[in-house]
Length: 258
Image 1 (cartoon, rainbow, N blue to C red):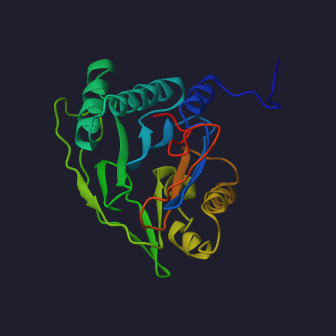
Image 2 (tube, helix red, strand yellow):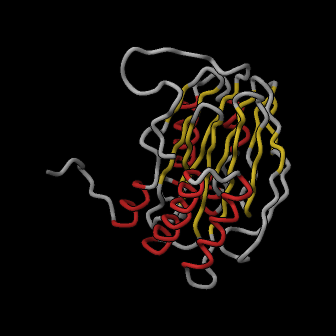
């Protein structure tokens, strides 16, 4: 039985299946919300996250190309990242495993840019791998700025490469927005994302990503030339909040795919 008034193209169907089951996750130490608006010619963007007792991990990625080839490339990258996490690999090992999986199973010239982030919920310390991706934005004390990160080669370009794991500065009260280049270039070039982020400071992260997404669509007249994707993370900090339950799933585990 059909459930959509407008059917997805095959590439969009593949792409949507790569996203987490819930686009929003709220916990005592943070709130996270994601948003993806595919271009008319799907560009292979994804976002993902997983939460366990010890850490929050998230990723945002952008596969080269469009339509089914880009969606399949994104599938390979996201699948390898999830598989690496389930193997218990640390952030550097996840990045290397995903990079090598992409290099071994895709044609020459195929690559994916991305950022992998891990936040230790006990210490509040965060780390990031930046594989050729757009720098994230931080709203702190009313000021929006790019977070200065070293930019390394995208996933799939250099087989056997080891990626640097960089410290990712987080302070209670920070709002971090991870995004893809569809938010900043081509026919969305006139959108001032930093200004729009500052204007949305009082909104819930779920409202922030929808507001920024709506701004992109207005700027482009609804004609996106590239996927536009973002994750908004509000970090409150403090120790993990313990909870107890008499029924249902373990409250320390999120519903997002591991």
